Amino acid sequence: MQKTIKELQAQWLSKNLIYEALKTVLPFSKQFLKNKRIFNEKDIEMFENCKQFGIKKTVLKYSSNKTIENNKTVSNSLQTDSKNSFKPDIINNKNSLKEEFKTVKKQFEDREEEYKQLIVQKDKMIQVKNEQTQKYALLKQEEKKEKEEWIKKYDEIQKEKNKWIQKYYSTKMYMIVFLILLILASIFLWLFFIK
Image 1 (cartoon, rainbow, N blue to C red):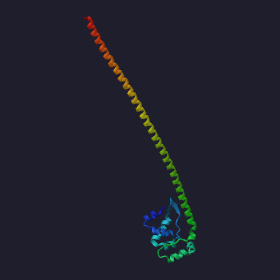
Image 2: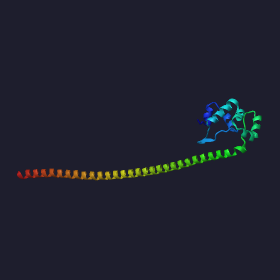
Image 3: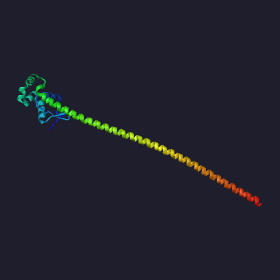
Image 4: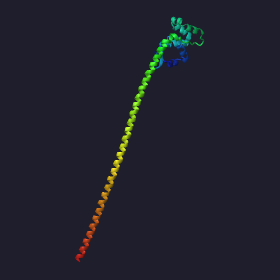
């Protein structure tokens, strides 16, 4: 069962205790998952031992005899440190720190590459969307112009139709008046010549 620092804090382990234990020569695992350090069951057991018995006793219990013999500074700090904190031996941990740094650096580079690809994809999507909105706006303008042209043509046709209708009715009225006058004139002539 693997846990992160936050999950360890949920088990009533203080953050200070966790970081103080990490500074010691205890053989903690060096696993990372998405820039978070992961601790296995043995690591959790060491943390719980630190909480229960103190860091000094935990270091004596879990670190190997060779490590303690090679680390004179650790043994000196065990005797003099009243706050239960230990400083790591830089010489022994140099390679592991380099490996950790390389791992973290690679994870950051991978994440950076992912984000760069996401940014490029989003930029392309925004560009396509802008192009589509511009095309849509142009189509709407053309459609509006066409509507205005058709409305103008329709108005012109209606005006011309109205003119022809007026001409038709005016000629029809002239014809009716002319027929009435012709009938009256013929009646008048008929009456005048019959008498």
